[in-house]
Length: 125
Image (cartoon, rainbow, N blue to C red; front, side, top):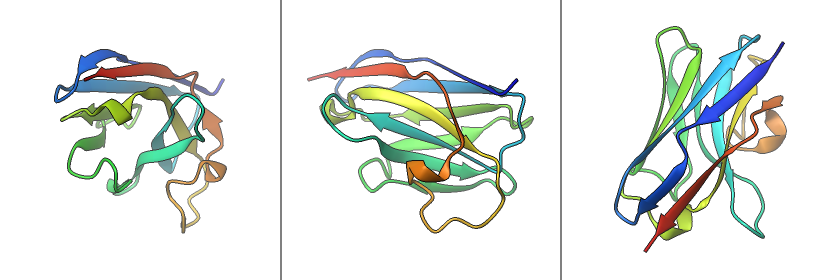
């Protein structure tokens, strides 16, 4: 059974840090990613990782502040959020893509096959 389970969300003050995790089971994904959706806004890609070689991709809005990583077994995806801003407030989702075909848009939600239920992040000013 394919499953993605996020954890680590919560409240943090602006400038603080938070670490999200996603445990994947029942699949062998070639890309994994974090997306977020703020209230009243569309879902947007935050960061992605190509699991085979560890290449990472980031949205401009989080570059230099967030770090995506995977554990050695490639079963847990992490997102280290540093220097949090109020605009980072959103529901964060873990996603997985099974295909190894090259992606032109690594942070497009349409390219991912499986999704977790999400974990809420709230950043207070």
